[in-house]
Structure formats: structure tokens, C-alpha cells
Image 1 (cartoon, rainbow, N blue to C red):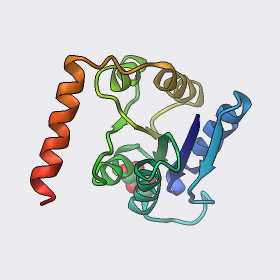
Image 2: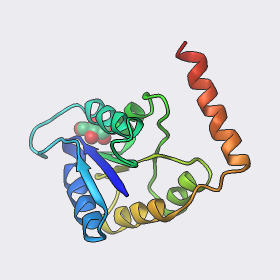
Image 3: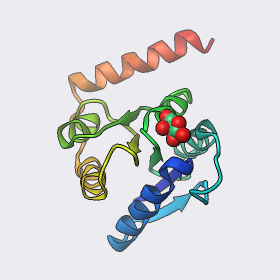
Image 4: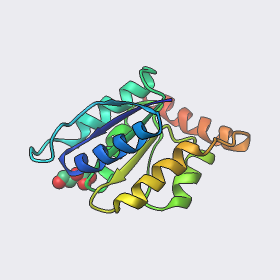
Amino acid sequence: MKIGLGCDHGGYNLKLEIIKHLEAKGIECVDYGTNSADESVDYPIYGQKVAEAVIAKEVDYGIVCCGTGIGISLAANKVPGIRCAVVSDVFSAKMSKAHNNANMLALGERVLGKGLALELVDTWINTEFEGDRHLRRVNLIGDIEKKYNK
Ligand code: RB5
């Protein structure tokens, strides 16, 4: 499995922890920036980079971090085909894959402790999409995109 990661300055330190954690498990990581916590940058740039890498199949999944996880998830979700879930509890991390087939996860460095953040990552990665009626619903999300991207 190959995971693309991106962040703004507010999520930089959490992104480094996630990369260290995933690489220790033998999961390949591709880092799409930013590369510092000290320089203020704009989160949409990094949400878009990772989202486009997922859609281009450069990576299997994306994980993005900013201060809250919200801004970068909103940006990623503008790329057609992306379902980026911002989560801060284990149940939602699990359901975001099991029911919503989220292909990106967004986390907030200013919201989460490191231990919980890494547990959210593990839960999401290790959960399978359940398909069936949930596939129908995920496809309906795709239909909304098609309607507005004409
Ligand atoms: C940056 O200060 C902060 O606004 C950003 O990291 C994020 O929390 C936005 O949603």
C-alpha cells in the first residue's frame, strides 16, 4: 500500500509522526509537502496535491493534516472522485471507510493528541469498505459531482 501525505504548517508535525508510524509498518509514503511548521502556507494547495495524486493513482490513499483537518479536507473534496473524511474519533474513522469508502483521511494537529491520531490512521487503513447498499450511496455522491461538473 502506498499513501500520499500532505499538510500545511498547522499539520506539519502530525504529518511527520504519521509518516514515521506508517514507514515503521512497512507502508510506503509519498510526501507532497509542505516541509516546515515555521512558514505559513495555504492548506488548499496541499489538499489539492494529495487529492490529485489519489485520483491519478500515484498513491492508493491520501492523508492530509492541517490545524483542524477541516480546511484541507474541504479543499481535497473539491477534486472529483475524492471522499475525504475529517475525523477525531475511532468510530467515525472506521465508518468513514466501512460505509463511505473514504479514499482520504484528514486530521487536525491542533485537535488531536499524537496517540489518538495514529489510532485513527490505523483504524481507517485496516477497515474494509462494506460495499452493497453503501456502494449505491457512494455512487450517488458521484452522481452529484457529475451533475455539477458538466
Ligand atoms: C492555519 O492557521 C489553519 O487555519 C489551518 O491549519 C486549518 O486549521 C484550516 O482549516
